[in-house]
Length: 194
Image 1 (cartoon, rainbow, N blue to C red):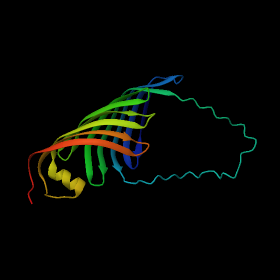
Image 2: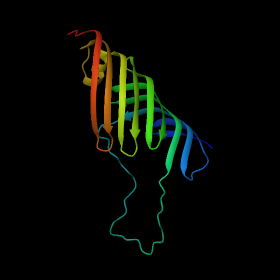
Image 3: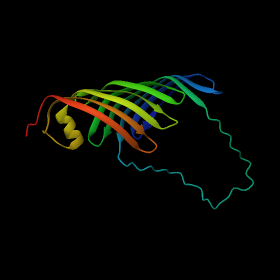
Image 4: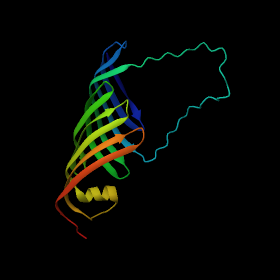
């Protein structure tokens, strides 16, 4: 079965193509998913707003014959590609993100190569457990413009010169909003101009 969708998500154009098995009895199988999103802006302390009014708890349903039976389905995504042209958070800009991966046994395995940040390249490889809400990710950055990075992250313009490389290992608990990480970085041919 082939499914396609397009529209906007948070005011950004998206397109999605799915190729999947036409059976939902035991295992929902997606052979290939290709999702494109033009841009996404991460807002700090983003408020979640819903236009749906919650029912008044004082009102009880009488003579309701509605029964809920929900079966928890297992999902298998044999191959997914998530393409994002522009990711922003405040002044930080990452471009050309192409995330490739799979989903099996509620574990997402993914990697990305050659995302662009501060004139350099970013790579990432990791896993995410949908049951434990836990991500383990290894990031690497090569040939990053130190001055551009310092300006974007710390608002320091013309403070550091040189190209940087970095590695970051992160464990992220998305349910508790906790991040444990260790990093190393080096600046090549660098100096402090001021």
